Length: 436
Ligand code: GDP
Ligand code: IMO
Ligand code: MG
Image 1 (tube, rainbow, N blue to C red):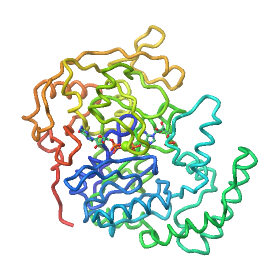
Image 2 (image 1 turned 90 degrees about the vertical axis):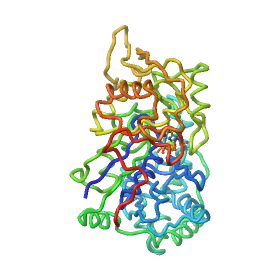
Image 3 (image 1 turned 45 degrees about the horizontal axis):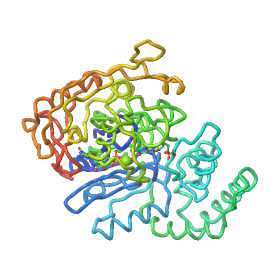
Image 4 (image 1 turned 30 degrees about the vertical axis):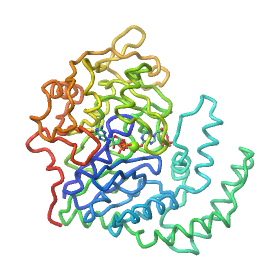
């Protein structure tokens, strides 16, 4: 019956996809909880690289039920393209289930996303322009289209025409933009719906039945808590909750079932889009990290901003989410450094603080106060057990634990499935499988 949450610890792209895939072998179901096609979760196996956006990262595990949860916003044609591409690579999608309660990213949402960005007085947030923000806005404003509305052609036709008419008013009157053709929108969505209908169902009921039957669930979050709409660097955030509490809500799994909250943190920091990032490096060290970590967005291809590990933000995230254990990924990227910096505090108006400012103007002004940790200057990509890791690498992970307040139980040493080192005896039995 227990459920495990796999959530990011920073600004997204921490390796949640890789970890979800690695633990899916020990789980009966994986439920994606939030976000939409703004997410890009990478899994690298012997069959190649898989970049998943809406499909849960358990999909490469054929026996695992993969659920697109109620908290996700789904762009149906994008989901169809993703599924068809997976099928073309020999991946079975029979175990996919799409929640009827999930909301639909309509074709006007990406248009509005781009318009909102260019009209924002304070400048761009740097969204992925996938329409996530406008889709979540419509959901909260109670004018969203839900997956359940796509189940029958009649209903789809009626609901979609009403929604397009309403949004065309906004597009033309407020933004002076072109209206969308309702016939085209209906026919594109109907085409996607025809493919998706067999997978649409009461996912929440199925998940509850599985939990009651003692099955194990993984909840896969998208984004990272520093992008969370409530606790992140607002307004430079995404429009959903990428937290542990949000994971339960978005997956339709009660908190009482959760006995493990795995925070996935990179060994350094990255961020895509605008917003504060105190440890960002604008020099050759930042560029070296970008090149070694191949830090380019999985969804948009944008270069990611890079910097040292931010212990202040990391502690904030770990405490508020009740992180019980940590996977530190991309440890191998730091292999070449003689010394590594970790921000142990911020300096704001001349004062040292370990508080995370709630006012974004203050957050932009903080400067990191670093502590220096010796590097290991050794290739760790071949490490498979704790004893393969150099003492200084283990020392670095211990330093991170002092900020995280939770044990680091796994270390990523490369993008491959097998490049995840269990650090404790009771850490995940990677690649293991369970009775189904
Ligand atoms: P997600 O959004 O959290 O699933 O992460 P992304 O897939 O967007 O970005 C993580 C990137 O790092 C991907 O390119 C992964 O293949 C890669 N990756 C994951 N873990 C490791 C690791 O331990 N070492 C290295 N070098 N790459 C990793
Ligand atoms: P995964 O799940 C990194 C960022 C965008 C932008 C902000 C708002 O792969 O970790 P949005 O399109 O959501 O309205 O953009 O959030 N962002 C991500 N950054 N990884 C992601 O997802 C992200 N999803 C959104 O770059 O700064
Ligand atoms: Mg990503």
